[in-house]
Amino acid sequence: MLLPEGVVIDGRTGSVTPSTDRYEKRLSDLRGFFRDDAALDRAIEAGGDPIAYEVFDFRHADSDLAFGTTIMMPGKVGVEFYLTRGHFHLRKECGEAYYTQSGEGLLLLESRAGETRTVEMKPGVCAFIPPDWGHRSINTGKDKLVFVWFCATDAGHDYGAIKDRGMRKLVVERDGKPALVDNPNFA
Ligand SMILES: [Fe+2]
Figure 1 (spheres, rainbow, N blue to C red):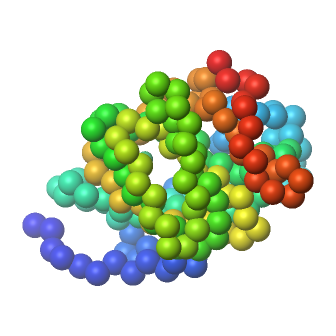
Figure 2 (cartoon, helix red, strand yellow):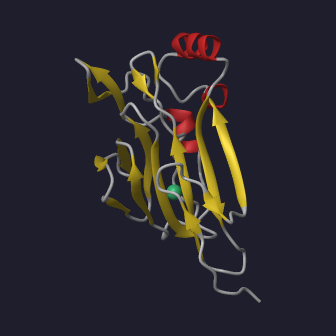
């Protein structure tokens, strides 16, 4: 039987204690997700294939609710800010919430019909992700971006759609600021 417990989340580092799982994605794991493959090769070479983001889970199969943190490093590949792969949920009725703890970024969302929306990610903002919207987070700041997510345990991840054709918009640095631009590689 699962018992109640208090899980300690550090909003600055993103650590989750206790956590049930953890994974990390390095730049080389994100090949195909950035616009500029040559810039990605250069960034991997220059940085020793740095970690782009880490995820900590608190997840039990016998509970319908899971939560955890995502910790995104600051950086760019060419002019494009570090991003997560982005996904739709396999269970289309499942939404999610992203509660930003520290740093600054942009949550990029795309509906099945192709509508793009963004939600600013900064401390105090809890982003509501409606069911069946694809979502990707982007660290547009100079520090780590840390957010807590809450989601159905069995929502599932469909990374393929976004990997195969990309998202319609990219977030790049332009004149020292983040800018949303059309993705020239969108299939
Ligand atoms: Fe999600």
